[in-house]
Image 1 (cartoon, rainbow, N blue to C red):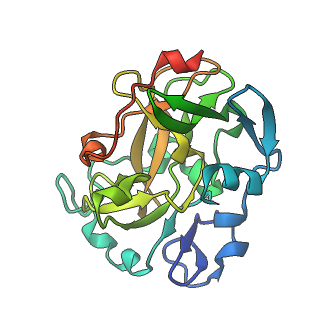
Image 2: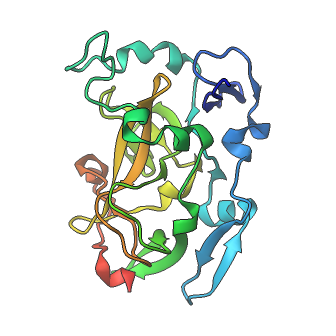
Length: 255
């Protein structure tokens, strides 16, 4: 039985392909890239502690973006340029992605192929104002999550960074041009809700190569307890614009 290739969305043509080499395409809005959503909905908790399950329209309203569960490319031409992505050493014809692991070796190939996420282990909470800054939303655990567990892919649009202020929801891909990013400003999933912590981060974004493309996933760096906020370190470049205020998030918010 032939394994289905991973769906990839293209904004310039509003189409979806199954695999980077595929020539067949379907309309993007009818494809798994945008159409797939957990049938049970996503748990949401407001500032008063009230819980409800949101459907796709509800979570899009809360997140202020279009829901997506697979990677999108801003322009199909990015596929043609992928041969330069892996030039920084150490690389070779047999290891074109250098030290970046494959999705198979990392154990996340099926998650990427299906657009899966650890939906039954997380919920969205409205945090509100901290130190005079409206933090907005955060991603929290509903149950214990073991160290090394993948929560899901950081989904967004692969594009070129135009300026630092455009990078609020963008993360650079490590072995490529530093201005090539996955931007979750307009399209994304629950990973775009993960907040920053200087010292108390308990998860990380890591890259893997999967079916010829690089993908970014979120992985727990230690065991997570129930109702603990998932936190990552955004990196120094994110904080370069002086307009961005840093607010210390840690265990105080998790109680």
